[in-house]
Image (cartoon, rainbow, N blue to C red; front, side, top):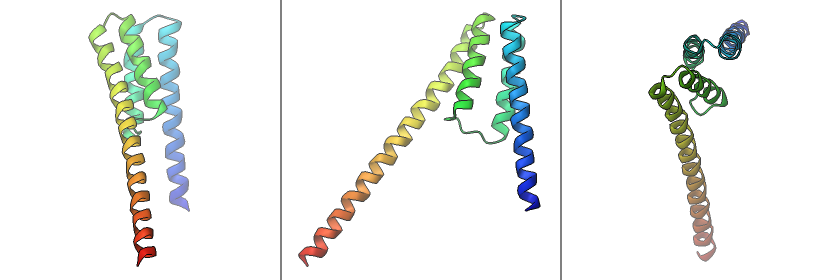
Length: 123
């Protein structure tokens, strides 16, 4: 029970840290227009979230990387912005591929079950 509390506490602290970095990055982008600083803050948020084994297919990953891409674009770092966007696209493609593989596996399992039922009925 104590370890569950510690785990929850760690997660809450991580969520607060990522949220704080995200908000600081947004302020740097929108209020002070310091885009290089915003990109660095997004990077810190990504690093903090990735340390928690955040899946690349998650909405948080997408938001942080697209925010960093926008900051890089506004800072004139076009190649870095493109690299950030490509990471998001690759993660989405991987998720789509994983979803399709899951659907195919389910369809194959259903086909095998039907085949087994037919074999049992004919025996």
